[in-house]
Picture 1: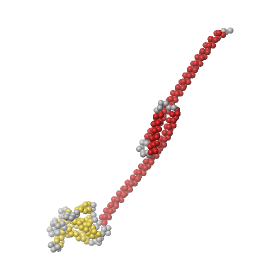
Picture 2: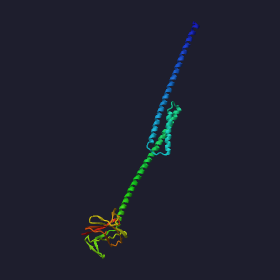
Picture 3: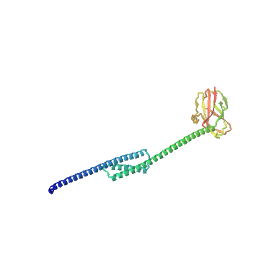
Picture 4: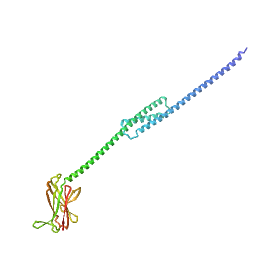
Length: 304
């Protein structure tokens, strides 16, 4: 039969062993829990950091789209300018929020929702900008068409004005009185006032121009100013004391003599005497007649 006093020490040693085993198991459990807890926390930190980076990248893309939408120098309405300012303020707010050292899960979710709303807003804003661009292109096209039409009308108007001027010139030319036959003779005036036709320069006192007017229904009836230009044998214009300037065939000329004649469109003949009171030269004298801004005709006489 065993001794009870010998069994008691053995039972005490067994209890100590069980206690040590229990402590070791507890420590192992605690360490295992702390390990997985730390690992989960580290995984959460990595996940939050990755999400912040992704959101920052998304914000950069959104801002780039906003910059691209407003880079065409379009004239925006006051409302669209305000919308752009709000979008840029929201971008700055989100950037500042993501720069914080730590974000709670709620803050992260809020930032994600705001980025989603910002993405929708910028997409809508870009669509409005595209529509505005299209409207500007349409307006530019319409403006160019109008300018082309105006240029065409202006060109046509200029052509018509030129045609009218040409027609007016033709009408004026057609309405000018014109001479028929022109003859020039030299005359001598005696002391008793009697006149005789001569051919010598030394005996010539005046030149006489005889001419008729061609019937012209377009010419205005009444008085018409007549200009004479007398060219001597040397080719010089003979200018008397009452000579002046006039316009003929769009050219300013100096005349030798000026008078007025009555036009009645009846084919009548006219006579004009001219003299400058000086000695005549030997050779050919030419007299050119002008009226209504055009040349009527000319004649000549040779003196010996």
